[in-house]
Amino acid sequence: MPVQALFKPFQMGSLALPTRIVMAPMTRSFSPGGVPNSKVIEYYRRRASAGVGLIITEGTTVGHKASNGYPNVPQFFGEAALEGWRKVVEAVHAEGGKIVPQLWHVGAVRRLGTEPDGTVPAYGPTEKLKDGNVVVHGMSKQDIDEVIAAFAQAATDAKAIGMDGVEIHGAHGYLVDQFFWEGTNQRTDEYGGDLAHRSRFAIELIRAVRAAVGPDYPIIFRYSQWKQQDYSARLVQTVEELDAFLRPLSDAGVDIFHCSTRRFWEPEFEGSDLNLAGWTRKLTGKPTITVGSVGLDGEFLQFMVNTDKVAQPASLENLLKRLRNEEFDLVAVGRALLVDPDWALKVKEGREHDILPFSREALGRLE
Image 1 (cartoon, rainbow, N blue to C red):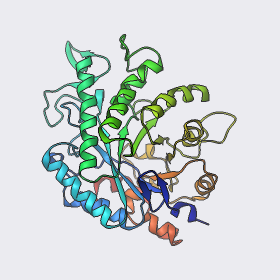
Image 2 (image 1 turned 45 degrees about the vertical axis):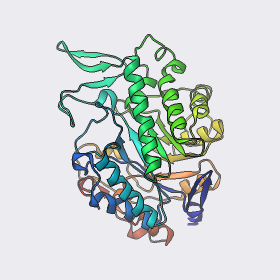
Image 3 (image 1 turned 120 degrees about the horizontal axis):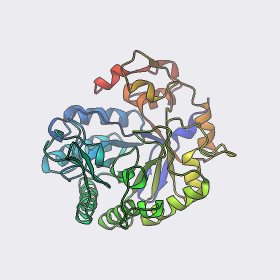
């Protein structure tokens, strides 16, 4: 199997990657107090040393009081956390890799009692009450401005500590995506209504990040059709709707689109084999990252519940063919890299039979 396509360098502006392999962002919850520690540094270093061209970190929360939704996830604000990330950057760069943080605000997913301040409710596009209590605080214009400023500050800090760009998390039913989605955005102001208006928050956020980091600093934007709450959801139904959705985001300052799907091989629209990354590249002319069960024979949904199922390594033939055809530019690998830090090296050396299978147990370790 000719795997060379995965190991060709990639260049876009100031971003020069040694390979086309990207480590997908995966929440690991191994940063007590929100600070990446020595185990986190080693976790990322090992992937860079084995041939991952670009690491996208696990979701890391921006400096807003309601940005976090889970215990022990890392922050991207505060002196201690940023110093931890600086050490991660230095370790990855020493191995010849590149790294960007995924900047994250969970929005309405947050629950009362969540760290760092359990009294802070979730923030989202639309207010939500339960038993007379506010469980989701409907964001005011001031709240929106504060969250956008937090993303811009995080991007500024990323550049200052040597990160090679930033990824904005606009997928999977978290805050940016909650504004996109009609089911969670019932606003009647300029941030609600049709999809063009529901996209306004993301557009303003991207513009603010672009203004903060300057014209040459890479901005990746991750988006998805599917949501955390609904795996069959579709934000857009047609190529024309996708074009209308993506164009303003692209114009606002996105350099690379990270197109999250459950199975990379599935066509996005009838009548074409192109997947979501393929269509996004064709419509915007921007580089794209494909992702979705790369290198494994079982998709991640099977592992969201307690199970003894195991995902075995799978053929890369279809992926390589699409990459050679320039359907997309980069390939994000998730669970296969989580369980086997040497995945890229084993693929390069033709040692597919040595690749470790993925099981739910791997989520409980940071190796």
